[in-house]
Length: 321
Ligand code: XMP
Image 1 (cartoon, rainbow, N blue to C red):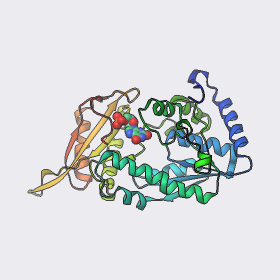
Image 2 (spheres, rainbow, N blue to C red; image 1 turned 120 degrees about the vertical axis):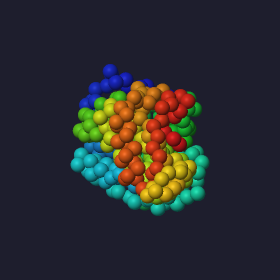
Image 3 (tube, rainbow, N blue to C red; image 1 turned 90 degrees about the vertical axis):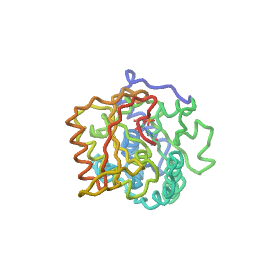
């Protein structure tokens, strides 16, 4: 492990911000730096930290991959702009959908998203910017999980012995690498991020693709996006850890206008959990489930079946892909 953890109880957010701004300024000097903003807590905190250190010498890109929730790209970009940082919105939807074409396997879908992001879109933006410094929101847990072999986080390069300056011509700066998520949230709050960002519920990197069984086409993502908006609206007051909608692949027999109609199936999941390691389904009132079913079948085109997942994690996972 490169550096020791700064525990939440030992963190003074103001001092941390000051020290990291100084370190970023020293490292970058008079040059420019780039970073990618996703709207998650880590990348939002990095954006504001680096903006404080570098001002308009920081170039921040928000890559619209076409697989986010309703209105999410515009909402994230305008929120961060309101905090003072300049953000460029890059429309890369076609590239992501091209890469996902014909892919049914969960791991292949995840890989297609990672490759399109790093090898195609972001690397092109970094090269075009001429910057030699790249800021990333790697946190302590990412390093731990990579070293333990649990997850191969794409943002861990130095820890894997990869010299980015030598291999790619740029240096990676990771200001949050000594913090875990609660400490990152505290820094985000001190930086003036709105609570909707620093306390944001988890959302997977592969976004809505993690909630489509089978091929994630533009049309099928649009359906799960609509279903997700309904679930998030209806379950907002339930205090759940996370709630989501999944679009299944099977066609389900149903009835429409007095005729047999093979329609779509949406599965709703709503989780109680502390840390996402284990989770159990929230005991939702039946009236809430009925309202979900009524809205899904009337508002999401083609839906004839709505189910609620009652299995725990493990053996289930929280997402479907
Ligand atoms: P699972 O499905 O593994 O999810 O039980 C546990 C938690 O992690 C989130 N999740 C992800 N987060 N990239 C992420 O940043 C991913 O690829 C990813 N997959 C799952 C999930 O939403 C849940 O909170």
